[in-house]
Image (cartoon, rainbow, N blue to C red; front, side, top):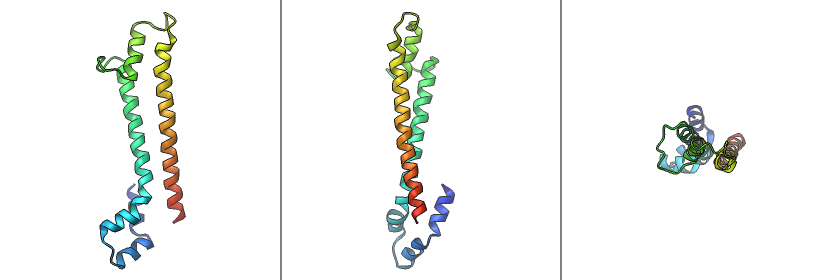
Length: 124
């Protein structure tokens, strides 16, 4: 990100805007922010994915609060009550499928935003 910010600072259209008298805030909002918005959103989504996976992993091994209903605690209670041995695969399968679909969906959104940001930078 630092390299992108430094290269954005030295772009010709930024210099033109600076020399034409635009304020720093206006340059940031109109000229720089559209180029880094996709990258920032993709990083935010990746951070959300890390948070979801961490919570699920901690809950599955039993180190989380079992009082709140999360996807990880659903898997924890299914394992604790031996749902797989009882043939109740839906107890384990539904939270696992939900986590997988959530990851795939958020990953695709993150990849799309990252690609959009990259094509925008390439066109300049």
